[in-house]
Length: 328
Image 1 (cartoon, rainbow, N blue to C red):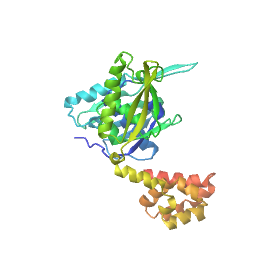
Image 2 (cartoon, rainbow, N blue to C red):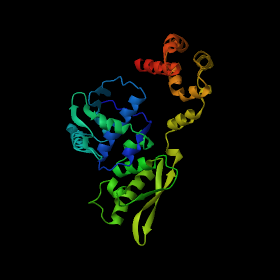
Image 3 (cartoon, rainbow, N blue to C red):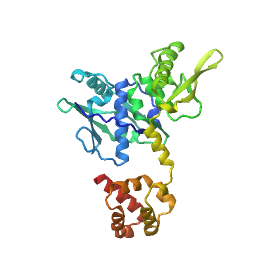
Image 4 (spheres, rainbow, N blue to C red):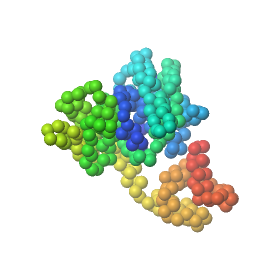
């Protein structure tokens, strides 16, 4: 049986995917959540050390290995029937881009291979998709990984992403290029507005109300007698948010001066001329360095010659710490 990563965390998802137009099943969405998780681990410099989870750079993108069971909730998948169907279906779906000069279509994943002996699946993600996952230029959404993975309905997943961290009322149109019907690829389904509200909006709200820290109240918006969309008023259930993630968020707001040992803080200031803002900006790396690198002061001292020769001495120090952490 595959060992599944169940640790909760805040995932950061590009708003491009949050607002994108696609029609995924819940299983396909869980594959996408696993992709976002892998991409986040890569940019955080976290090295995956077990055979069940791998991110391998290749010429065209990344080769990803995850346990096949990691896209399930608690159901059994005899002969990998569910996994086969989900990965095969996602292979057939494309990210399409078009400008004045070119039109391109890139499959979201390619060449999935299930190892029945290991209980893993390995597949390719092309650079265009990987870069899209990491493109935060249009904004981003943070959400709890464990919460997103447990929803039954794909509409619950979409609305959870949309409402997670939302503090102001949000208008969503029913029709049009940015409307919910287009986003969810429901042009030929739930054509009656009442059916759309019942099977999409109300169904998602019910599941969010039951188990999510974020939900909404939907107010119909009309043009004359015609319903043109809904204003979603955010609802936040603080008691449902993961306490460990709440503590992480609280500690993130605490200045580095209170989290980094005095001798290390002073060494950075007086030996490398870091100011308090620069230390605070890099506090995650520095705190991890002091906690994981043996004799961290000695390690910093060994960087003096290299930093002296570097064009950006402070950048050299931070880069060297990150490199060392990857090696551990």
